[in-house]
Length: 311
Image (cartoon, rainbow, N blue to C red; front, side, top):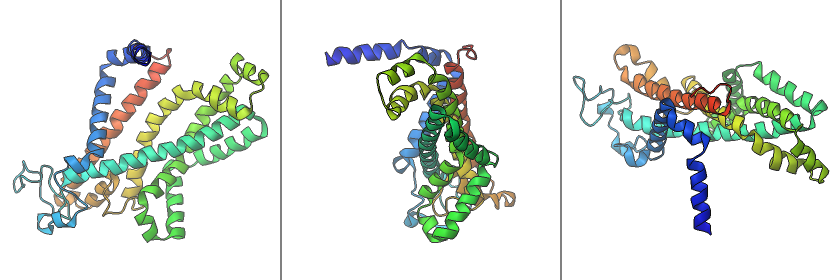
């Protein structure tokens, strides 16, 4: 029975419209393949990277600012060259992308929790609670995400101290970016809830005596998954870009804990002195990562909106 159930479930997934459209869209397939390759490489960086940028025993200051191996004066050990500390650029990109992805995924998870709670409550109960929550979201949206993140990070540094902030930089950035961008989820989920709560299945649940939390989370929320999935892909890319911007401004990851943003920031002052690879390669990696995520998000939006999809 279990084997038959699993087989039938796999058959339904294989014949689903989602997978059908995915197979027909070459851009989506290539973007997904590239994203999975980058994701696997990031989280398996200790196994893939030829050097450990955290291990001082493997770093030699005499190897600093070596160009890529295919250029004159390049070293065959360092395919993409080295930075000012003598660290292998390829290894730091792999380790840095893992940090950036952890921050991006963690921040989106926090945004999701806040956004679902606020959006469901505002859309389902309406009235004064809806007005209050949406006005708070509107006030925050009137400021740019980076501005809110800069203010929150500055407050955290002043309150907790620079040393504590540096030791828990990943957690701090997850909280900062999560608090800065939750209104995007709240507004999207609220709009979906306003449409769903008028449908018959919600009225039937009320007649059966179900409590509001059960109706909200067991009945309405599953029908909001499509817009949540679409906005999540966009928000992951935004969170990664926000981390890179904050690290570039000196409010993100410290220099000794490489992320894509801190790598770009560290090499920016050397780009005009000839060591362009220190910033160029992490920057290109960041552009590629954000690009494939945004392409997947655009494809998901088209698939879940039949009026837009033309595949």
